[in-house]
Image 1 (cartoon, rainbow, N blue to C red):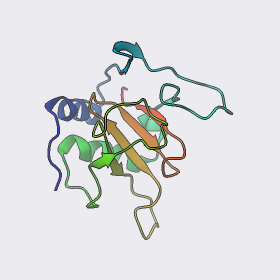
Image 2: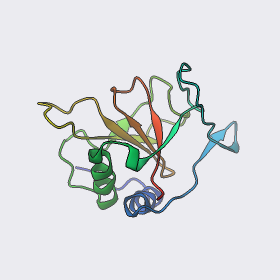
Image 3: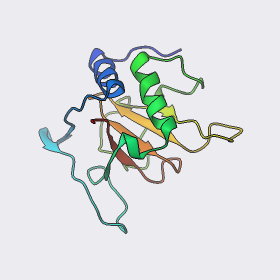
Length: 142
């Protein structure tokens, strides 16, 4: 069962589902900073070095998952909404419980597949197509 974690997350998810853009900040040593964006094809993104892509450039199932998050489900898998630990350190560092993961369906897959959307408590979205090996930040604005 998915519980609403924070009203801000719910509001940001709803805005994202409606296609309304909003800013994303990361906290670095107690000060707000903008998340850096890398365009280097060889550099592995780190917590503050994640490429930004439009939601429309992702598989259509990603937009469907964003809409489900905005509606608070129902989600197709019991694991949807669980805490994502960011053990790989590929996303900006935050306390445990800040990130949550959701399945992006993979047509033809007999299981959950490798695609996920990760949400942050400040309303940010990240997408991985390779089960956490790499991420892009999702710009949901139109």
